[in-house]
Length: 86
Image 1 (cartoon, rainbow, N blue to C red):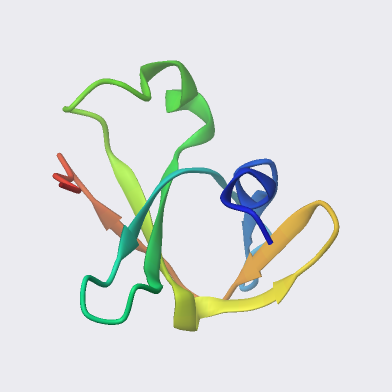
Image 2 (spheres, rainbow, N blue to C red):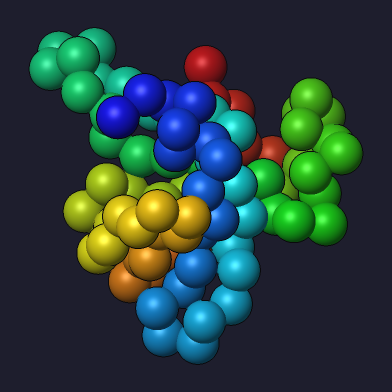
């Protein structure tokens, strides 16, 4: 699966069915070269994707339960403020 494919899928919290957002970045392990987690822009914050002061939701790869045609179901999520991904 390409990164652009995952960016087009809605991330949904399994517990309550709430939409978490869409992927706008990923954390990659330098040692393994694999994706460790995804950073989501909240739906109401999508227009602020280039702002450094935006809240982000971090989804660890281990939290992903199902990747479907249009959505990704996750078990839990962590909310981070002012995330510096680089």
